Image (tube, rainbow, N blue to C red; front, side, top):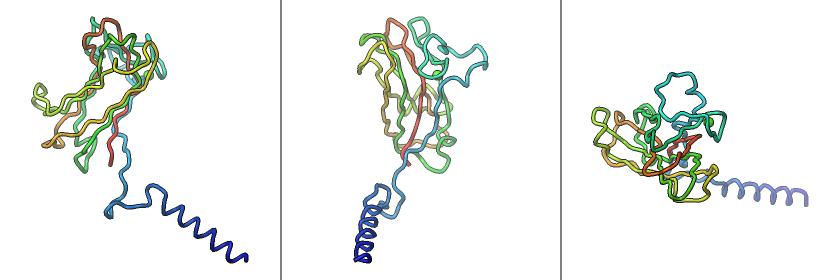
Length: 185
Ligand SMILES: [Ca+2]
């Protein structure tokens, strides 16, 4: 009786383990996992000089600092990193960028831009796409936005990932904080 119950429990346990996500290797490979490539709350930029356009303490989702775009300061401090430094052993297939943003109204159509550019030719990006910050509610408070970007053919380790907040045609300041860039790997 006891042995039968134990056996039944073991079977259930095994069944549970087999149905857990992550226990089914895909074609012999480990399951895809999210890997963090970059995250910033902008706190660490404090004290690094005056050439940090848009860095502000007017509003923040975390800590004291965020970035702010406005008609007077349309481009904010820019993140640049070589793909080969972010993903040293492979070419990423898809990147996901998430951020907390503060947008006053649906008409303030600022955006966070993600580009992949040649190191020596930044004016000719292989990819340049945006998260449109005024497309979703709420307004006048912090909200989370994210978007995934499929990597174009032909990328290599020397290409740069470029990320910044851009004012677009917004008439009032827009804020962003707690940016996080990940890949599925
Ligand atoms: Ca912050």
